[in-house]
Image (tube, rainbow, N blue to C red; front, side, top):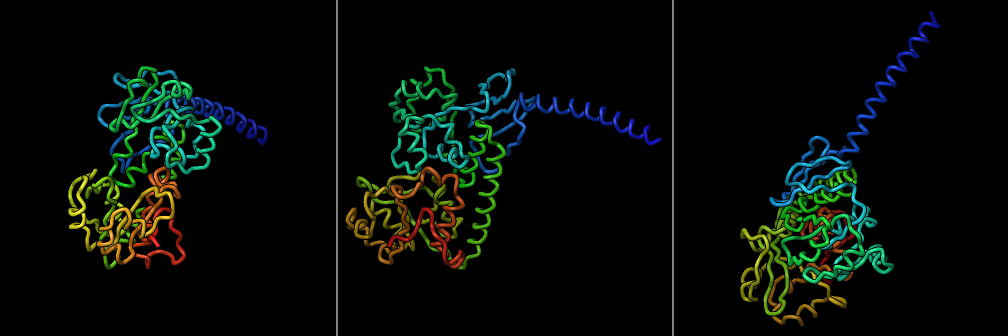
Length: 369
């Protein structure tokens, strides 16, 4: 009887093992043809994702359509085939680079437009030793450098200055990255999922974003409980005008989520250039003043007054409540797009210090001393 049972177990093992092998082969084939990690878009409005018949279809805006595949499969009409994961690419903006930084994927980046205000030491070292080449600025690209980078695809910002015609002639696939158009901070950060799909780091992107989302929403809910909401304005005078971001801008949303009210409440997303008198009428009595620049030395209230003597008229100047970030001292543009939770906490710590730990050390913004 015992021998019969042992024989039965062995036979079942062979049968089940064979079934498992067939199932495993089927799964491997599916992974070879298309993506196996699901990607859901929750906040971003610039791209959508659909998985069908072993192909991942990614639509960017209304006019750009890509089929991400891992095998030699046919793709739907109107879609550009991209074999993933890509191994080499070029980034046109710091925002795009931030996606690769947080995904620990600098090895994939082989070209940049330039290094102005670039802070990341690893990227700078790669530029210095030639692992990353500089291809020139938008509208004046060095095609030879583009070809030297030998990218599988190039991430572009199609609605900026452009000048992509010479690059198009190389036949390299151009992939629009519209993260900069997102008005929701979490929507902008969610573009790490977009890049993750191209470089084979979907799961990592999903996990990182889940953490960002949780921390951001917890801080937002905490700030909403504050008894008082201060007012805040942003920017400086440059060349005779003051660029003020609109009331629906990404930055305005960050202010609101941090428990403050932005002085401009219109429906504009980009903003407009105002004369000093107009800005003063809007922000003369505002509680806080946010400034981001790349001042070469230690920025100060004296420097702010020297740049425009009338700056001392603002109440925020008088009360020493200028919120400041120096791009020469912090990796603002190259990491803040994927750390909106950190950015939010900096503002919450300033607007409502009682809501954060007493020893909190800001990453980007702090009150100007």
